[in-house]
Length: 287
Image (tube, rainbow, N blue to C red; front, top):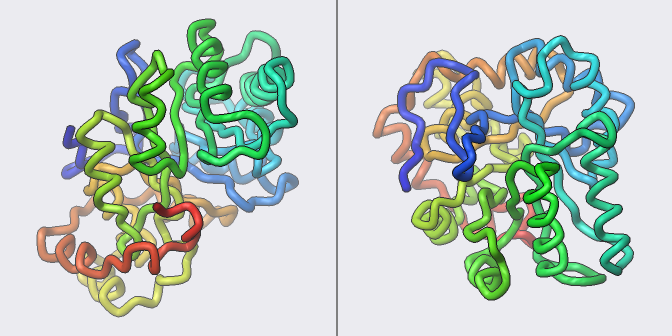
């Protein structure tokens, strides 16, 4: 499946996810490492500037703040796409269900709330297994408390192993590190071939490569910032980028990527700087 975004002119652009009419915005707002005390303000700023997709996780310890921002925002809940992730739990079926339910209620506004997308954050657990989590997520999906289910940091072997027990396969989403220096091409091709939507975390390479001369040449050519070029690159590759910032000016800047298009030469240059796992910001998560 080729979902590459060529001429996208709206922050409200969405893609279908699953087969139940659910749609996911093509640009998300990430909250990784935004301190909880600043997270609510950052999310409200993102929603004011047109974002309708917020990505969080239990690991970030800010689900309640994201939920509070959604509740306070004048944007209707049904117009906002919320993602979270589970990484670890103490063990046992009851504890697992309560763990997931706590996140759903924190983000969804109470016992009647829901999460649009719940991901398994890693294929490695200290207690229990991916199978335990996935089957429990499937139950929440059947109950309507989780609209879509997916994974994060899963390689091809992990995705293949899920076929042994999953009723929902393929996963709706795989969220992985992606940017020009870490392109994970084999995994990306596998996901696209199997209709798995790709979310790109750290699409700005955590800001460590913004001085790259090739990137800056392209940015100057289009009158854009290096960060905007990287986000546009993700969109045109068919990935859903999740840039993170708590600075209001950058929230606005990161969304201003729908009025230009990288040409074939630009894309070829950026494609050519792939360093594989060596270029990853989080190499332990790259297979």
